[in-house]
Image 1 (cartoon, helix red, strand yellow):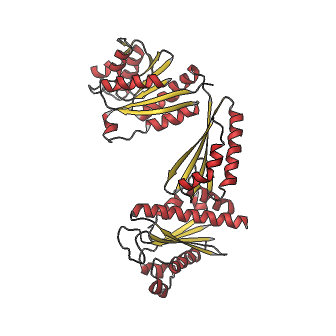
Image 2 (cartoon, rainbow, N blue to C red):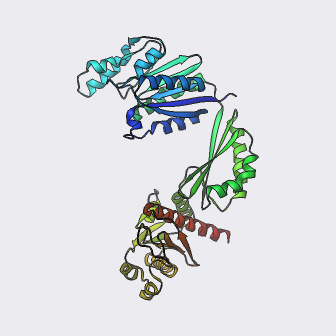
Image 3 (cartoon, rainbow, N blue to C red):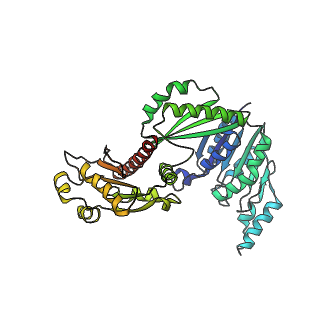
Length: 419
């Protein structure tokens, strides 16, 4: 079955100036994918007639569906409607139902309908109007040489309502699309290049209708397997078999399937095992506790935290021995070991974890440069420690440390089950 290709064009100087972030395209891409429609390109252009025309020409030469957002307001810089009128060699005509919708909106807001807003109800005669019940700018649907062009407002909630209620159902009816299925495998603790080397033979053997994408982010790599086919059930089964092969190749690095964060995956493991955890943080300053408690239901396993930033707090609240700090320093294996073990005792939890390091960008020494960080995990059976060496970026060091400690918890829980 022939693939149905879409392109998205976002119009507005405010996007190019960085004054707003284009969240529309990501949402549209996800929704189109559910229909089996592939987005091959997203283009952002200025409020310029020539740019809009050129973008339409280019997209029309490549895609079956061209979706546009922006440039439909009542002011002079909103050029999209006029450009489309000229592009499709038509004229503007008053669309009475759109005028009624606009008038109703102004009435509900207790505002007078202006002539500028009334002009928004004038639409190209060649288009099928797309009703906008949440705003004053109707959308426009054009069909030309077997292709569909749709223009919608750039306001996200207006665009989403129009897409969900009208545009997506009409696209589904207009085009016969293949099934598209995505399966996501989340990995942690392995660099993208090393992961790619481990998966090279498996990836090479994938059939042509299955594609793998590597999506790295802060110490994790999402593997997204995308399949195209005519039978969703058969395709899903085939893809699951490939995911099962992945589990045999990189079992120690997979922490979840689907769009699940590491903190959510660890939380689920703790909940399933009926275990509780407490945190002792120095260099991460509470960020670890924040990540754990960002998950709904974390009160079932998370007890509390001590942010022992100063050495006096380490001794007073966590019973770290003064001699340990004197002999080894705050950033050391003995110190972080005592922090993890003692926070566990303090809160009466099954697990205690701790961080202590030099986040930077200053504070390092020749023996302990910036980015030197110790983490620890303690339960009633064992205490594990790990030395991390990161860079001079403070915020990145905090994030990487948190990720590394969450992964240490995951690995420890997995090893306990296997034993």
